[in-house]
Image (cartoon, rainbow, N blue to C red; front, side, top):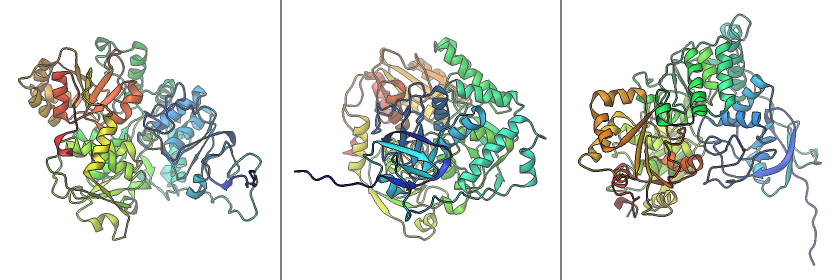
Length: 579
């Protein structure tokens, strides 16, 4: 005979990132989620095929996840979900979160729409698993009907507001255009959420919010432009959702292409440069070591902090242009020395004979091991990675981790020794073995020898050196007639390879170029509707591609990608260096 036992209804004090009240069925996962590439803004469905919530709908639920991860564009996706009526009723995190929270802030400021966001202690968060229905209200996350017990701690006190300078207060006043006032309100609100004591000047901004995620992203930018918005610091623009000059000849959807182009134009009207690249570190304007900047785009943030030694938070979409319009940013995150220290050591087993697939595989694995902590990677002191190797590592790392940077001992500028990255403190250590990377290769390649319809290169954007390497691999070979090979790259890099004669050689092989857009934003028919299998050398696109394209996506080294373009088949086995 079973014996029923009473269970005390769940109730936990919460820090409210966004105030409000909501109740709904609980949708719980202990895995962080990137809304960009992970959630469809039109339906509210989770499309990240590697996430435990894949196929579930967020609409009307109380979504409980540790926090966001991956792309800075998550803020834009959440705002579009809110305006489409497909958003969660409320969200519960186990850690402070900026990207998704910013999306709700902007929806409040611009459209008067909101949803509550609460943060609870990790132990309390773990107890949510298995519950059916949750309510968020008045500094509490609880089951309906539960009440705070006398012995429970009170909700954490709100963080103090930053101290504003006379100039900061002027930027909030009627003395400046409406766009500037609105932008400054958002900057100050985010500074308060981050616990920043003050605001600082930045030398440059890279805007990721120019990616078209739906009508809300276009309306937001056009409002700011119409309200007199003008950037006050040098501002570059991320990859957009169409090749602005050639989308007609490429045959992409005219409605979406015109919207994407109009969004880009709105940012250019505000004074941003039409760079349209997800790899701004390839531009001549790349920042120097120690320079305070405000970059969005997850891989660019990670590269700027880790490889260039510049200082930026992982700024969400929309906050990026707000900082560009004001020149002011919260003094928080990686702008501060203590927040650039490693909190985890990752020891990498020696692996001889490795090819360029090593770096994205390792970045993906390290990001999984350090979902929130800045790692210090050891065992690569003699590896001498190129800038493109570090780009590939960082992009894959930023896909699985929310951390804004990494250190590689003996390689990256702030990591001459392990003690320098940890501040001399003892931190946990984990190991990465060859078998771990075999597992990751098989995760991306659950079957082998598949027929390949499309080879997708350039996520992040291909560099000049990568184009040179590609030309060498294609020389003297003939592309399979049934395989498309497309490279996405910036306008600046395309101009360089045209001048150098590399573009002609690659086009003779049968390669098509897409400028301005990258693989996270391209449309059909650049991804041919009839194609079934895509092969890429990008760990980032191997992760996001299945959800974004609806196709099977496989992963391989660059040489194996070219071989597949010739033979029409993906590699039949892992590379030799994986054993």
